[in-house]
Structure formats: C-alpha cells, structure tokens
Image 1 (cartoon, protein in one colour):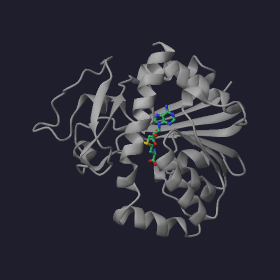
Image 2 (tube, protein in one colour):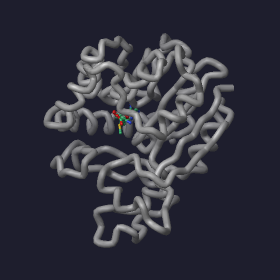
Image 3 (cartoon, rainbow, N blue to C red):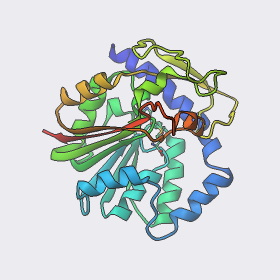
Length: 267
Ligand SMILES: C[S@@+](CC[C@H](N)C(=O)[O-])C[C@H]1O[C@@H](n2cnc3c(N)ncnc32)[C@H](O)[C@@H]1O
C-alpha cells in the first residue's frame, strides 16, 4: 500500500473517531469512569490481561500504549506498578477525555496526538508496549504499524497485544443468523464504517466514514516477527473482550476463539 493511501485511510479514521468521541464522554458509563478514576488502585483491565502483565513483572517499567483512546487502560497500568508514561492516539477528542481521567487519577502520562505511521522521534524507548481491543483493525498496513511500535521500545522490552480474534470479522452479531459467515476471513478490501463508533451496540447515528481492515492472525503474527520482535506466546481465548453484542458467541459448546493475547520481545 502506498504511503498516500495509508495517510488517506488514517485521516478518515481520525475524523471518524473524533466525530464519535462525544458519545463516549457523557452519560452513565462516563460518569462511572470519572468516579472510578479518582479511586486508589483504579484499574479497568480484565483478569486475563492483568495475569499476562503480572507474569511479565512490569512493576517499575515504563509503558506506552498505542491507540490509547481515553487512556483508561494506560492509567490502569499504574495499579500494577508500571509507569504509564506515554499514550498515543490520533484522536484529540478522546485524548481530551484521557486528560480528564488522568487528572482524576492524579497521574501525568504524556498523551500524544499522533498518527502511529507518522510518529515524532522524541518518544523514548519503553519497557512495555500495550495494544488492546480494537486497534489493529484500523491499521491499513501491518508492517509499518509494527515497525513504528518497535521504534517505541528498548531491546528486551515486551509487547503485549490483547485483541479481538480475527475470526470474528467473518460474523455479524446483529444478523438474523449471527453464526452464518458474512465476510471472508481473507477479505482484503477495507470495510467502510458509516455509523458513529459505539461500544455497547447502541445506534449512535451517522458518523464520519472510517475504514476497517481485516487481518488474519497469521498476517498479524508474521508482521510482528518480521519487524523486530521475537514471539514469546500466542494464546487464543474463549472469552469475549469486545462490544456487548458479541456476547452471543460466548459460552457455547462448539466455541469459537473470541480474543487472543500475543506476547513478543523486542529483539
Ligand atoms: C477501539 S479504540 C481503543 C480502545 C481501547 N482498547 C480501550 O478499550 O479503551 C482504537 C483507538 O485507536 C486509535 N487509532 C486508530 N488509528 C490510529 C492511528 N493510525 N494512529 C493512532 N491512533 C489510531 C483511535 O483513535 C482509537 O482511539
């Protein structure tokens, strides 16, 4: 993919995220987040991710989150003893919410508005890089993405990806038969997202057009190891870590993988 196309897609995605931000910075769940952030030990991470991070002994380590959104997860790393130093996201509107949460939590990470494909050079080299739910699918180019992530890390540092499983891209949880595949696992055309981005399945109305990219698990792992990382583990999980409407795929006798944890070490 050309750098012009990468720029065009990521600019569109930036507009889509910024246009959706107001839906996330108001209402009951935002109010709960504001209250929670002010409590000692603020931590929104689930048990699966906490257990991965504890095994890596991240206490005292400097951390960066790529696609940090409102920084709730980045800030949560402090409860595990890490130093949440840097959050990167290209949505200024979500970072503004992150600044409010950081203030409530009494933490002072640098929240940087930047496109991961066009990072400035003064960002330091961190011990831990975290990427979570719903980031990789907004990336038009995996090689450039992992190259940029590698540039944020010191050799020996750990990359943790806790993402939704690519197989879920085949299914539509809101279809009359949510188990009928609708999209090829190997889809290569970007999928246009026309609606505002919400997490709870609610209809936020029309939004700015964004572009969602289907990547296979093989493509993700390959791009990771080909851009300066050594794979340490890849675990697929039966539990769900994405929008509520995907709960239909959970707790079934013939269980799909619903999310995965990838741990890699910067070479
Ligand atoms: C689904 S959200 C991450 C949510 C986060 N995992 C959480 O649970 O709080 C994805 C984020 O990636 C950001 N993003 C998408 N493309 C990006 C890019 N090219 N550079 C930087 N950030 C990007 C979006 O602005 C958005 O905030």
